[in-house]
Length: 489
Image (cartoon, rainbow, N blue to C red; front, side, top):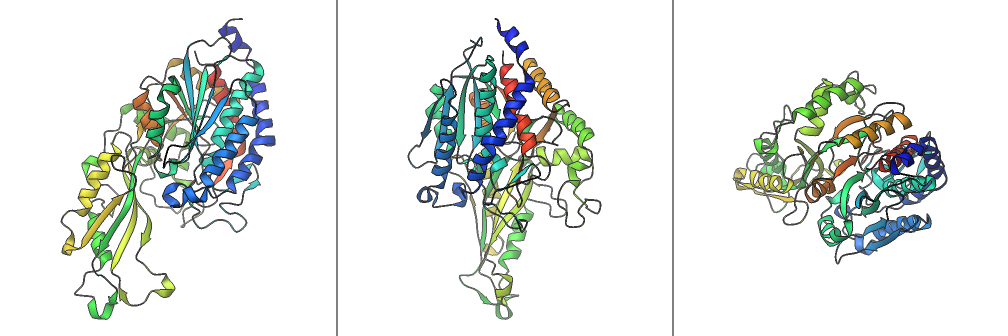
């Protein structure tokens, strides 16, 4: 039987049935155990090596994978000295697929910190399945990926379907910018093979009604901006009017970077031209999602978004703002006492944790160095101003990613999988988040096709309170990934 006949006999209904059963019986219980472990990324847990929680979630996931008994699977947990562990597995090609090419499947197991505001009956480390949603930190972003990847392979093997060789790379440093990943990719490059397709399930979805392919990802520079003006706190009645407020100086420094009225980033070097193809895709996606692009957020001025006043209510511009334009967020602060302990004291310093999202085509490390110079040079009042970017020398920022042109076979397979398992055509959407691996693989394997997808749809709220994984969507995504792999030429 030749390959085209084998693909014709592939039964999508059986793929979906297998995925549904495996999710209910094996994946959801495994994810509940995973969610309960506060395996925070190294940036948020300086004692991660001593705590051993990243090692534990890696061991647990590895044990689950090996328990599936996938024919020919080889797996190991690799630990380079001083770096977070990764899971690496490989499965030989099956059936008539003798291309010699490799599908690389990616995910991560490290998590963001707790954050506040969780519903009273929920918590970041307290998994709860309710109305098809699995609540808790990390399940959707993206602890589920390794379990879904192996299930997709099992579903194909159960039918005897042809597929290429598959390798898996599951890291534990993604939420810290994947600064350990380049060393692992370099060490593993001879074993990765001829990567022709990357399947990354760490991304989002515009809705839960169709398969969504991510077309771009923003980069990011994060770090701590600190302004020091005194060596100790001084009575504000004594010093104010003579000693400038460290907070006021910090505001002046940030005004070099951002127009506070509009949120527009001022330096041109943090912008890039938006490709015409991405603008056209944003227009199509805006036609599907409409005002839900901005109404879906939990606006304090109205639960339904009707009273909200976002930066724009134009769905096309809203999509481009969150995917192709730079933005600044202040995500943490230091130097402030709690409100109940705030006396009339001129504080000695103010520090903000900055998160600067970069357009996909702006180099992250170069942007980090430009940002440091912009913020530190010529400090007002000769204050001590420092910006310490996250990461390591030579890799301070994460570069974004713009997808390559989609090959005809992949376009056909994606749309076919979406129509089969969701009953709607495939959608295309840029994402405002960052997956550092994609830029690395784009450079290392420039001819590879990319299936970047995920379960982070509306209100799933990764990194925030009440994060959830939409289980019905994940089941269909698992079957879709299997069907796309079976269509690999």
